[in-house]
Image (tube, rainbow, N blue to C red):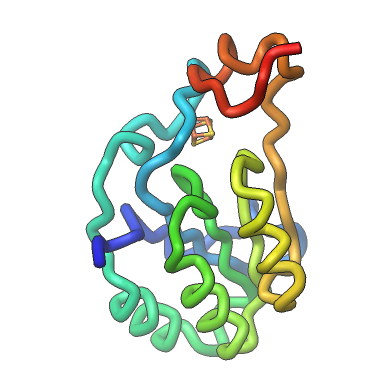
Length: 141
Ligand code: SF4
């Protein structure tokens, strides 16, 4: 299985309200927004394996409140289920930053109580969606 994670930000006070978090940057995205501030992650390859993430989170026991799944698009990765479960097992809150293109994945995470905070980046109305995101992921009205 390809490594899912492009990079890890080990400490953030800004990315999860009122919590000390780290950020897992998931490699790749199914959109190509012109304003994207992480193009190297969108087009990059994952470099960090799940086991390395586990080792990292274990080394931060007691120091973090939460994990933020960002990217790239975290819901494009099947490993999001394992990583979210791992974080919850460690007592951490989970936030996802998502473009909303995989609603079934988000629903599953909610149903399984594996996500605590969802930051949905609403892109555009259907008529503007292709222009904004570079992808036809919704039908134009
Ligand atoms: S959805 Fe987000 S990560 Fe993907 S290209 Fe757009 S702004 Fe970048």
